[in-house]
Every structure is written in C-alpha cells, then in structure tokens.
Length: 205
Image 1 (cartoon, one colour):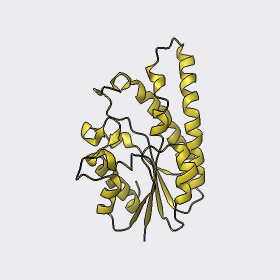
Image 2: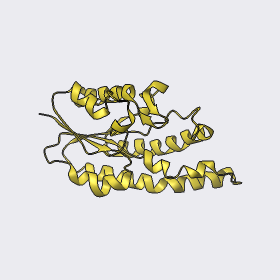
Image 3: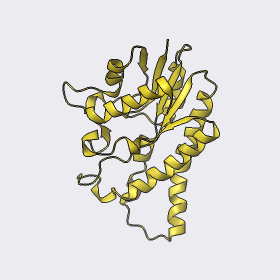
C-alpha cells in the first residue's frame, strides 16, 4: 500500500487560506486516493525547517514524498525588490544570486538527504503568485518572476542531477481562481495540485 508524505509549506498546508467549506491540498488528496497521506508540511516553513524538523518526521514505511518548499525563503528577501538602488546590471545580478545561494544550498541539502530514503520523490517548483493588482505586491509583480525563475532553475538543475521527478507549479496555478490571496493556493488551485500528485503516485509524470 502506498504511503504519501507531504513536506514543505503553505503550498500544501493552505487550509487557513481557503474559504469555509472549501478544501486544502491534503483534504483534496484524502478525497482522491485510497492510501494514507501524511501532511508534515507547515504554513510558514522555510528550507531550514524541512532540514531540521520535517525530514526527521518521515515514517520509515513511506513510499512517496512530495516536496514543495522555497517560496517563503524568497519572501524573506522580498524587501530587496522594493529598493531604489543604483547598480549596474552585473552588480544587480550578483546581489540576486547572492540572496538565492543559501536557499539553493539548503534545497540541495534537502534533496541529498531525501535521496537516501527509499521513497520516490517529487519536487514541486515555486509558483509566481497572483500579484498583479494586489496592494502589497503589484509593483513587484514582474521583478518577482525573475527571482522565482532563478530559484526554479536551481531546483530543476538539482533534481536533474539526482534524477528526480519535478512538477512546475507555474503551469498549474495559472489563473486568479487558483489563488486564495496573492500568494496562497485556493480550493480550486489545490484541487489541480492534488490531481497532479495523485497522477504522479499512480503513473508518474
């Protein structure tokens, strides 16, 4: 019997963001599959939390692991995008890479640790959010995509090195209805995510 473990942040643990009577990603999965789904993912988690806490909670009989982490690490650096700085393009890119390097290193640490587990692993990328028109994020709706793309490039590179499956959430959360707010998945988005997870466990992507 399959046993699926969900690691990460509010991309999975989105219950507090959906409307009353609507379902989280975990609840959608519980409705879609007949095997055990264990949610270790926690709203607000960053890569350090997965390394130091979540990995240690994976049961030994786990057959499949879904990892969705990194978005909150980017949010911790979001103030950079609001600054009015006078840098050359070269220096600007150097700063961005410097901001992302610790996240990338943590992500690779996570993948390396999980690769020692016998369970099959699926890594989800970081999505872009529904930022256009939002009070807080509209002014960085385009620049934030560059940050997301750079991190996702590292995720794809790491997963390719370890021969792991990936799921690009930018191709799943594609409409405003997929978001409960500018940066969290909605009932509708969560259902699309859950269906892709189910498909992966059953047949692979």
